[in-house]
Length: 179
Ligand code: SF4
Ligand code: SF4
Image 1 (cartoon, rainbow, N blue to C red):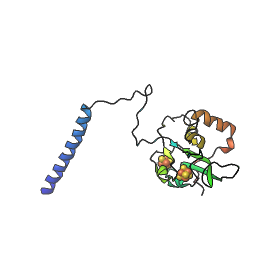
Image 2: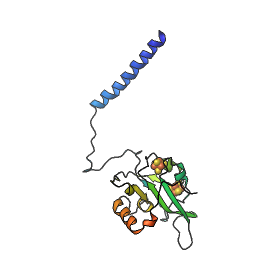
Image 3: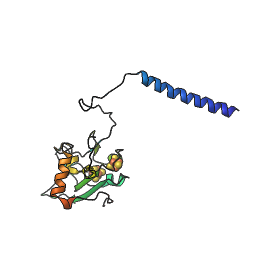
Image 4: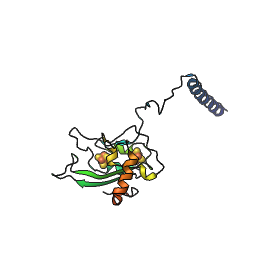
């Protein structure tokens, strides 16, 4: 008998707490974003399209360490590494990512890759990436670099140009990352 009473009390307590939240929200002021006519206000923890950062000297921060690709359970990051040379230095480390693709058809924006990255790859707030063509959702390094004029500004135009001009560089990102 006592356990039943205890269970009933817990259930009633749970329902009361839930109803309190419901009625509090019903009586509070509604917050409506005026999108797309006005700016959106994101919570600090909102995770959108990634940003690949540059250091103070303008060099790419990431060093093709593959940690992000290894951490991603959706296998949506594809990297090809290359060595920096004296004639062509792209990053501060020994290597740089010659190819860095993220397949946003698969990404679920939860951030294991960002947590794994030793060089501050971050999530931005970009979210307007919907497309009728799944190929357009494979983003390249040039679209993900911080400060890049291509960054989210003309993703469809960019990917169409790449497809037309560089068909052989169109990689299948479903491949497991190479080490
Ligand atoms: S946010 Fe998650 S799914 Fe998206 S690339 Fe990073 S680890 Fe992969
Ligand atoms: S973890 Fe960071 S530095 Fe390493 S390959 Fe990924 S983005 Fe580049």
